[in-house]
Length: 174
Image (cartoon, rainbow, N blue to C red):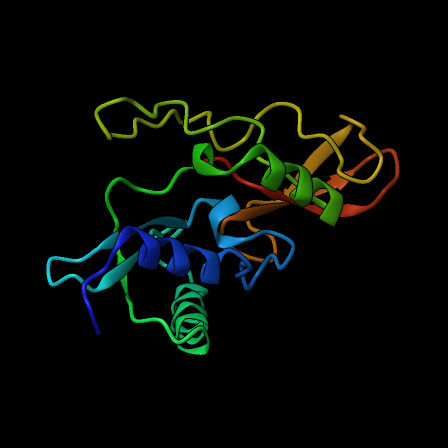
């Protein structure tokens, strides 16, 4: 395992570009903001830096396994480093990811962390997690209501559209 070069770091990035989130398979780890960086470690071995969407995310083990498998399949050295600070925020999600969520039937976050600051500290508002208007990802109606604070995963809330009557997940802003 040699020292990481710019070319080898680029090869690692390319090998991981296709990896999807195990809970939302239409979004890549990069688009979701979980895949933070590919860098050279102090020993020169490439490091893949990931940040969980929240500290108890059950998908992180699978994500790490998927990264290790992708590197192995590409014949590339590397290791996974989990970085908790700064904490993940929906501000890191790409606009493409938010559109993919909507098309998949999950309402994307309507606002960010409402406190992401340049100093790397997140300051949360008690109102950030439940915006007034969550549009239905199926029909676009704003006539929706929250039916449960948690949906299919802890990072989502369950909503129902009062126009088309369909239930849907809403990806909560953090």
